[in-house]
Image 1 (cartoon, one colour):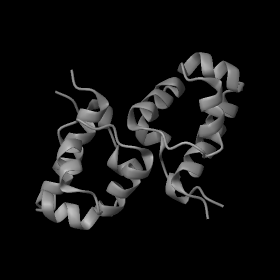
Image 2: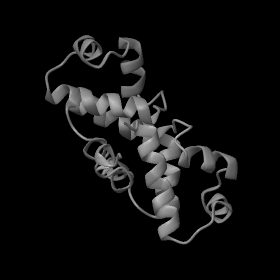
Image 3: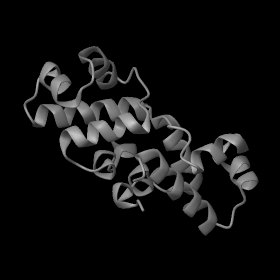
Image 4: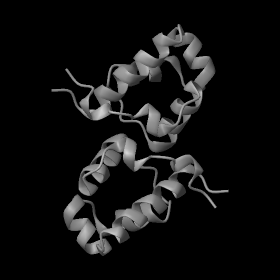
Amino acid sequence: MEDIIQKFGKRIKELRKERNWTQDEFSKISGFHKNYIGMIERGERNPSLKNIETFAQAFKITISNLTNNIEENGI
Amino acid sequence: MEDIIQKFGKRIKELRKERNWTQDEFSKISGFHKNYIGMIERGERNPSLKNIETFAQAFKITISNLTNNIEENGI
């Protein structure tokens, strides 16, 4: 069973790929270091609310959209 | 202008008061220390995704509901 940070990571990766952004491009857009993005996508980091806001802004969606149904997004 | 952690704090306080829970009661329900809840409600702490999940679970709502329209929830 995946935990919430793994589910969040999958969502981030999914949204990034929908936009056809590489991790490097997403790094430039979001301002986050490429390594941080990799760790987030693999569910290895527990992002803060402020960073969640930055991710949402990078995708031009709301935090609520970013986390929509995230609890059910597991394997 | 309020930042996202102040808006989140207001939402938490609002939901707690809707349920007529004191901070002490909410502390017992959520498992968070009363001091942490006070700091969150005052927008003094930047909660992690795991803690946001715990808040949502304490209110028996989804993370997406907890953060619904939070960006516009300012003064």
